[in-house]
Image (tube, rainbow, N blue to C red):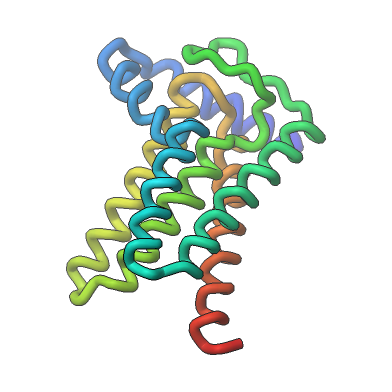
Length: 180
């Protein structure tokens, strides 16, 4: 645990030493892409798209992934009760671990990327989808550190949680496709 504490302190101090007005404003916009209400709106829009495309199992799995991530994030925050860093730029009221923004970003944007990656017809499109989603997910996590809302271990924990639900969703989709 000492290693994690030192890593968290070092990362937070380093990132906060680089804070400036312009990047702060940009990262405040980027962090919004991980807010629960934005995740809900995007999930609803993607659901409508999937329903129109007659991808009902994808719609079900999308909601399973997002709601599973939501439930587990809430449960872990409630159990662990980790306070947030002191020099926080954005207004937050919940506990710090795990980062819901990071968990949501990898779960939702990862699921969307996986869907479009499957549909892509050439390698460069697949690389673009993976690269674009990875950059978005990384920027959302970084924004949480930069804005002082989380420690590095909170962001990494959120990524692990979201990745678990994403992997579970992909696994179920593949099983369903194979008739299992």
